[in-house]
Amino acid sequence: MLPETSPAVDDRVNGVERVTVSPTDPEPRVLAGAAGVLSHGGLAIFPTDTLYGLAADPRNSAGVARVFRLKGRAAAQALPLVAASLEQVERSLGGVSGHTRRLADCFWPGPLTLIVEAGPEVAMAVLGGEGTVAVRVPNHAVARGLAASLGFPVVSTSANRAGQAAPATAEDAIAALGGEVDIVLDAGSVAGGEPSTIVDARGDEIRLIRAGAIPFSRVLEAL
Image (cartoon, rainbow, N blue to C red; front, top):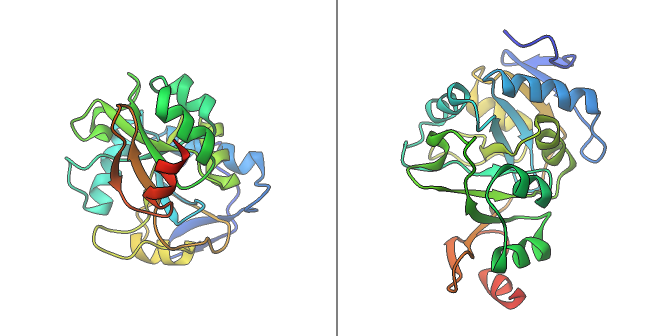
C-alpha cells in the first residue's frame, strides 16, 4: 500500500499508477509524494536525461532488494545513484575532491557518473561489495527534484530487466517491468541513446569504468 503522501494518480497502465509530470517544472507535491513512496520501500519509474530509470531509496534495504529481484540483477553488481546537486553528494556521501570535483564541476548536471566513497547510510547491497558508489547529477528536473524531495541521492538503474533494452519512454518502462513498481512519473520521451559514462577519478590515474554518452577523451581533456 502506498503512503498517504503519495501523489494523485492520473491513470493506470498495466496495473501501475502513473502520474504525468512536467519535464522542466515538476510539481513539488508530486515529487514529495513519489519520495514518500521510496522512503517506505517502494519503487518508482522516473525520467533522467538519458533513459527512464528505476528508483529506490538507497538507505532502505527492502526497497534495494526489490530492485535486484525485479531486474534480475546479480548481487555483486553495484547500483548507481543520482543526486540533486554536488552539495547533496557531499552532504550525503563521501567527500568530493581533486580530479573528481573538477569533473563534477565540468560535467554536472549531465551524463557523467563518478565514483565516490559511500556514506554510512547507504545499504550495503547497493555497493556490490565495495566501499564506493557511483553517482551523478542528471540534467533533468524530475530526476534532480526526486532526489531533492527524498533528501538523499536515489538509486537509478535503467527501468528494464537484465539483458533487455533500456527504455526512453514511460510506456516502454512499464511494459518491461509490468505491475511490479509502485508509481510512474511520466514526463514524456527522453533523449535515449547511450547511458552515462562512468569514471573513477579518485587517484592519479583516471579510469574509465563504462563508456557512454560523454567520450572518455572529453573527460581527459577537462583535466
